[in-house]
Amino acid sequence: MELIKFMFSGFWIFIGFLILLSGLGNFLFLMWNRFWRHYSIRKHGYPPPNCDADGDFKENKKEEL
Image (cartoon, rainbow, N blue to C red; front, top):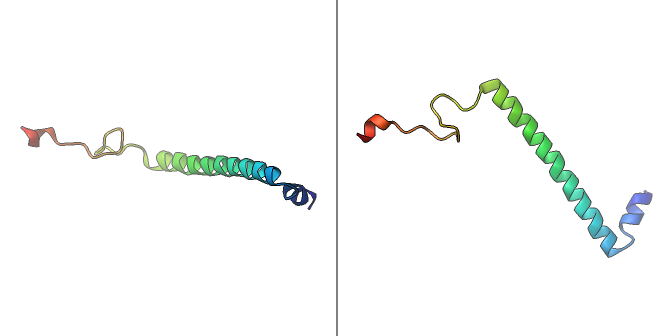
């Protein structure tokens, strides 16, 4: 309760808390995203054999000739 009272005690203090909270939220989202990305790559492998390193489909060079 004291933290909330301090947070709303002034405009610039409020802005500072918003910056800190957005940084913390961004960090938590990044960690969550990386966890699921790591899990998916470990489970399915990356890239699939029919894709290049970027995940795009490989072009068939025989068709170009």
